[in-house]
Amino acid sequence: MNEVRNVLIGFEFNREFSQICYYDRKAEEPVCIPTKVGTNLYRFPTAIGRKPNKNEWHFGLEAEYFGKKMGGIYLADLYDRAITEIPKDEPRGEDELPQAWQLLAFFFRESLRLTGLKDIVAGVSKIMVTTEKLDVVLVENLRMALAAVGFAPEQYTLQDYMESFYYYTYSQRPDFWMRNIALFTFADGYVTYHEMHEEKAVRPAPVTVVTASSCKLSDDPERRDDQFLEYAAKHMKEDIYSGVLITGDGFDTDWPEKTIRFLNKGKRRIFYGDNLFVKGACYAALEISEKKAMKGRIYMSPDLLKTDVGMDMLVDGKLMFIPLLQAGKNWFEESGVCEIILDGKEDLTFVLAPMDGSTRKLVRMELPGLPKRPTRTTRLRLELYCSSSEGCVVKAEDLGFGGFFPATHKTWKYGIAFPK
Image (cartoon, rainbow, N blue to C red; front, side):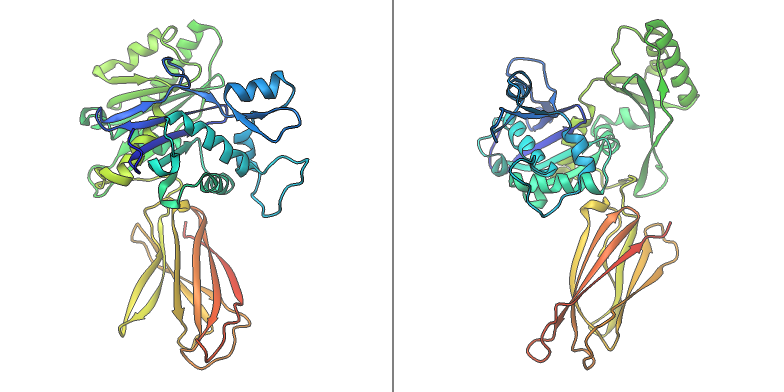
């Protein structure tokens, strides 16, 4: 692997296990990295451990050995910590465990050594981390962890499993995604159906994934096959599918004979394995940073920002809409910073413009305690960031006006809810 900012990495961060793959430019496909050279073992526990009374954390087999067998600390709940523990600025006491993002930073740093790169940060062009779903707390912990490893913001991206499903699908041959795609995920004795559909008559073509309610499966293989068949037939109905994907613990090819025959109707292409999401993440890293072959489509993710947020401003004497947050990206990827000069106003008016072309909405942000100054002598710094796919936060800071009116650095904060 070339180590001059040329390596594309997919990283699956799962509650119980994780795995890594890199994009092989010669083979033109992602390659999963084994936990031990010469084996077919690609998944490793999402866990770290340390020796008793030592502040030295370990990864992999060493973590289990020192943490479990030697009576030290073994943390197999990194995922749960990452989705529940809000990052704080206060340092932890000597007897307390590090914060979730600090534990994650060690986990990422050590697990990425499996790539064989001498300098991980210098060698990686883009790392895409995929996980089941993303929320505010998990996003912040992942960001802080990856930054602590040394990655710059442009080097890493986050996405959920369904977006990885999207990138995996459209990186296959066209005959695989010409029609609907079915995905079955297995976990904890349940199977869940997901269906991907592309609205081909529209450009860019919206691609959606619909997820059905899960189905509990019996422990008896024959009964389990019948239940799987009934569940698959119920959701796939008579629709036309060009591909079927199956992934997750609980599925193997020994028991679902009847269901496989049903899924194979019409010569559908069927793929199964435990590396779908990590490979999808790797394909996404390639697509986003280099290939850009999917410009004619847009994945309608639940995390997608569907509203432009901006202001109507005077630019060279003309009133223009200037977007500060742009629709079409995931909410956690989009932020905006600018400086403006107030023209006799004591408040700010933001324009919300939905990407579907529906009516614009105006939102007013008051600035109580704004210093009284002549017209066009108050400069404000505006920072905007999304708190979720449903809203954003605006922070305004008074910068004064040069040596004439010193900055007070007074700040205002305001939350904006996006149109439903």
